[in-house]
View 1 (cartoon, rainbow, N blue to C red):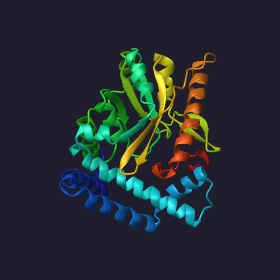
View 2: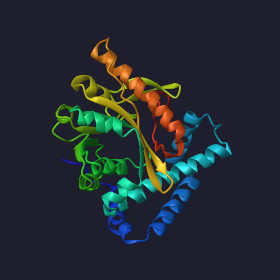
View 3: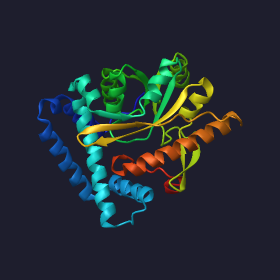
Length: 302
């Protein structure tokens, strides 16, 4: 029996429902300004999420805790985070041609050439920029894909999020509560020469791979490198960020499967390579890294 939604859960779900219904009806300048103002107010209150983002950004940038520079970067990070939500409410109403035109991509050939050769692709992404818009771009250029979504609360919000992403052309598998065959389903997709997109810098399964990330230990999901090892699909890191009023995507070169080692050793080595690529992408666009949770092992409760 599912747990009864709390009052907060119901309010959040109602807010998202209203967002998808109302935001596309209003001028973009009005809604963008409203979300930016809301971000500034949340930043000024310095709640737990803002303080966690500030701590995470201090680690990746080396800026001194409490410094004005770190404070301004954190405010920019909250504005970026709120921009993501304003955009997802509007995204279903934006023509696909406009999404493609306004997306500035480097390295797209790594996807196109691999798929054209009949080989599957596993795209691994950190939580940056507007990853749903990046997915809409990928579908728009002719490459629908499968992904896995964290199960949100309440269930009505999760179903609405799934419907939103499926409406953009994605195949969405629930991280939990599904048929338990996610890995097998994803493996089938890439073995058939398809594309899979997976978040890859924060482990949500408690079975992740330890890596060094910005000078400290954390765990990253084993799924993306394991899919590559098991199926021969190309593992391609991607970083997503805001490009002025448009969007940017960098598709990086393939991370090859090591020639030597056990399966576990190969997965660990590839996860570490992913971490190094993500470090470069996050360093280039730290304000667009939406990590408002604990990430490093030393920050987790014992």
